[in-house]
Length: 323
Image (cartoon, rainbow, N blue to C red; front, side):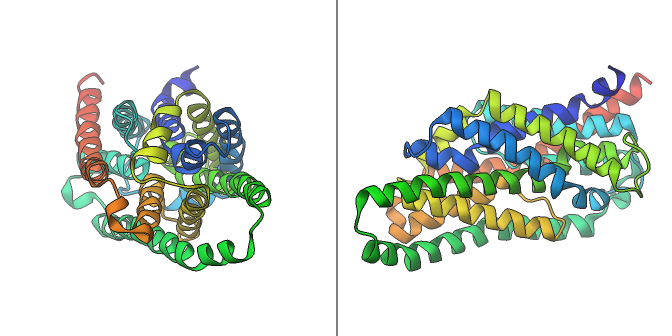
């Protein structure tokens, strides 16, 4: 019970990721009625946990922005990020879990070590990756739409066969996307507690696996319990999607996440999928994009790390007053 209490922030954050970022995986498929919602969330839960355990541990050793971190500071970092994600989820907006989490970690780093003690160089590199993430997924989606669309229309004429291929494609690529979500984003849940030594010797491999498994289960729980609202936003309100364009969006998002995982950089699943959906919309003509929704989402991305960082700083200060 004591360990669970310490991990409350991490578990809450993992729940928020599962609830919010499930839309990045099957939101388009559910919106186009290619897959039922209940089937989608079950597949997300299974494969996100698998990805967290298999791919996630490789990110844990590099997930730090300060040499000083305690259990209390880890709690402040994860709880601030979780609260930020929770509010955005309630507002039905795709949230950047990685930005919220890194904002929280930077907040406690500044609180404990001052402005000079935080790793600003690493933050700058990661920020560049956050900018490139939606751009990359948009370019990939745009290219797939322009290259594969005409080929499918030319060679696949049987409508029943085409619909069957789409359904199978959604399942296969959706499972792959859930796997990449777990592998890339799980570190932001239990990563601070791993750095604080909660799971054992940080130089060993198995403590990272245990931390990733716990984070993966929390992500799965969020997908299973509270993911429907954001799915509607991603699937219906950014641009109109047919089954093929929805499939392209999910695949483009998954490729970007998997590539980032191999560079040991947690990126925003929300940014990747919104970039992909925007790329799909651009391939049909820029007028098909809902600019109002996109601007609202981008505004949330700008505020997310700032709000999370300030909240983490405040929580760390409150905790210090009560020690």
